[in-house]
Amino acid sequence: MTDLPRNRCILDRIAGRSRDLGGFSVKRVLPIAHRKLVGPFVFFDEMGPATFAPGGGIDVRPHPHIGLATVTYLFEGRIRHRDSLGSLQDITPGDVNWMTAGRGIVHSERTHPDDRARGYAIHGIQSWVALPAADEEIEPAFVHHPAATLPQVRRPGARLAVIAGSAYGARSPVAVRSPTLYVAADLDAGAALPVCGEHEERGVYVVGGEVEIGGETIPPGELAVLVPGAEVTVNARSASRVMLLGGARLPEERIVWWNLVSTRAARIEQAKADWLRYGSPDSAFPPVPDEHEFIPLPSA
Image (tube, rainbow, N blue to C red; front, side, top):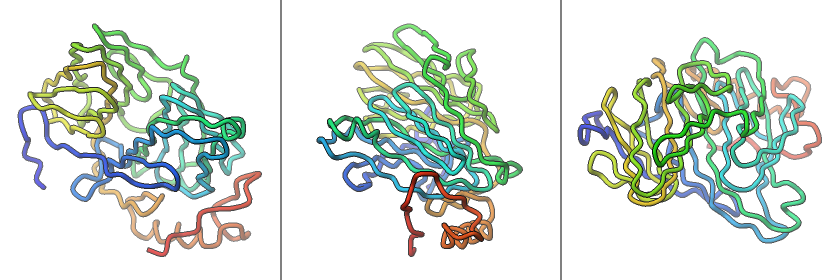
């Protein structure tokens, strides 16, 4: 796949691929063989929408990360986060959980016990932002930003939340390590939203509805990667929800293996060895408090 533009607006179109995560499905958009990154975004999943009967729910057991920041943003439902720093945080719609892995962190994500008892629905986006090469080994950190702290931008027929980075004259309080574009936009039928042009790489992911970009209809579950520098407008043919993502291009290639991201193959191999020793005193990955299980290292 070359980077020749499909038209004057769209460089690439990537349809989400369905993945079963044990009881619920996700649409995986990034990474894909021919495109590993859009700006710093190296991983992008839409989880759900899914409905769990009483007794069911999400149980993502403790697992490791290096070299990235994880970003959870929900439209519906609630998830409980725990990590090896001792963080315990519930995330609800419109909030941001931003976890910087740096040299290494372990976390779990599970359904809240109250929701598990009565049944509930979940829908949201989970993404990873690759850290600049100089920051890959920084100290791990976790920050929660309630929905009320995020800038809300109004455009004709559009309501936007600036999740991270800067857009439309607003800047999110979420600390980022490189120029970042991350916006959730709800559009009325007939709305025309210009995509802010301040960022080098940009993508538009359609969560729901029907939108048109540069004369092409982009269905739900698909990412349109935009031509750098092009003036682009998202036209909503019906009430729609889209995510704008991107930022500055990271100059180094990233290796993505399981939950591990690095510019160096040797660092990935070291993290694998460390995870094989998880729970022992000589592992670089500390345990998650109040968790007694974990996801083993994949065999391939």
